[in-house]
Image 1 (tube, rainbow, N blue to C red):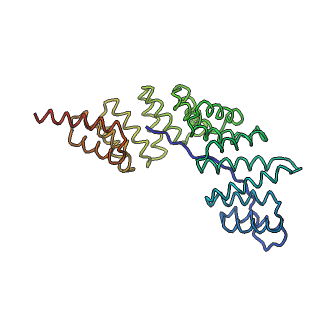
Image 2: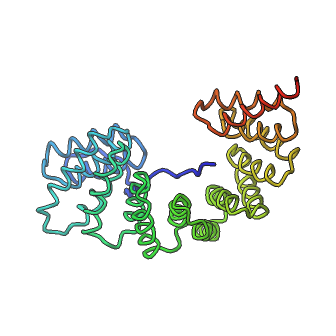
Image 3: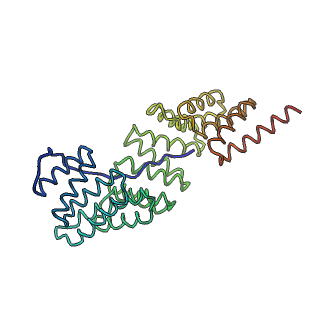
Amino acid sequence: MRIQIFPLLLALCLATPQIVVAQTTEELSQQGKAAQAAKDYPQAEAIWRHVLQIDPNNDSAYYNLALALHRQNRLDEAVSAYQSVIELSANDTFGNSLDAVAYVGLGVALAAQNKLTEAVVAYRDALEINPESAITYHNMGLALRAQNKLDEAIAAYRSAIALNSQNAEFHYALGNALYYRNQLDEAASAYRKATEINPNSTVAYMGLGVTLYYQNKLDEAAAAYSRAIQLSSTSGSAYTGLGDVLRVQNKLDQAIATYQQAISLDPDSAEAYTGLGSALKVQNKLNEAIAAYRQALKLNPNNTVANSGLNDALRAQKTLKQ
């Protein structure tokens, strides 16, 4: 069972004035922020480039240009613009706050390019300037987790939580890292805290469900998955997780119905087909089990559980024919 990991966070705080015909850089800046707030990123980009033609050393214009490019997923250009902010801000006599947010944006853009080591360096640079930024610790944790540096990721998430203990996403991310570190008791506690802060967090209940499943706390796992389904009735993964619990509890008819519901929601779920095959095999419905396992392997040829189950079912079928 997989835990959705959530994607990396970037907060964009922009003013929303009315667009006006502008001549000065200040007026153009207001127009650029309005375009950005309206999500007209190509227009915002054009305005910020105009500002920079007038004032090539305007670090604020470079930062907003970076945001506009980032939102258009033009990551190489966004990285270059963030770096320009950092270079200009190095000589800013008014402080380093823009420098810090530029490093954060740079880290997010680099992480999106899968340049995770460079992203972590950018986040660490941001934290040197602003060590009180919880979101920067969280983002750094995500980049470390993606590199499977679980102990460092856990430390980063704990730092984020120390600065902001009421952010459900921080606890959820910590739960993910602890789960993959096989610290299941602590992972379950982190997921529970996430659900306390945000009772509508489907992913937190999913994480809690899979953790409890591997702790063999099956009734609690079923309750967590059921809550996830209540919150998101179209989540095929939640139905698959619940099906796994029901199968282990030997509630095979319920498990089969649950897997079938998962497949109806997500026809490309190899895990749902694998679970369905396993439940059917236990019921000695070998032809159906074989078909389910084969579909799982068609979707994921590297699915070792489905491959093993298929071989078992084929051997059992051969024995019956003898």
